Length: 111
Image 1 (tube, rainbow, N blue to C red):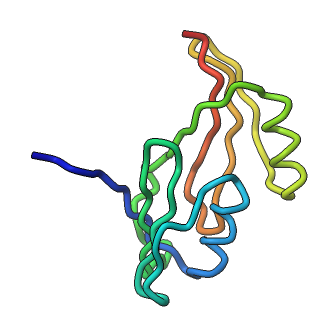
Image 2 (tube, rainbow, N blue to C red):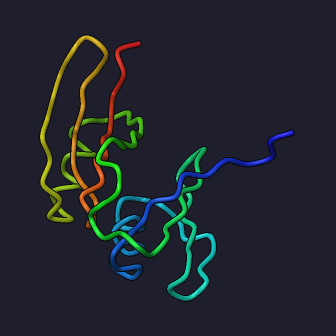
């Protein structure tokens, strides 16, 4: 019944959002001008839609697994992306935000 799934994020600036997501390893799949774009992450499609005026839900967080914490931390630093590190029972986290303030994180799970 379900063929694909995507998550759509409302963004303020299509160009800067696409550039940001490409900088952390996503691939641009499709773009329809400034109306809509799709970027691919392993196992996930994220839709970028204009209209991010800061009034959307702050209760969204997108996580990506990683194998090497130091390598990922260094890659984010090279991109001048500020991170907050957290280590807990479930794993080691690197929290950061996209250009529109969407919460993102990398996790090296302990399971």
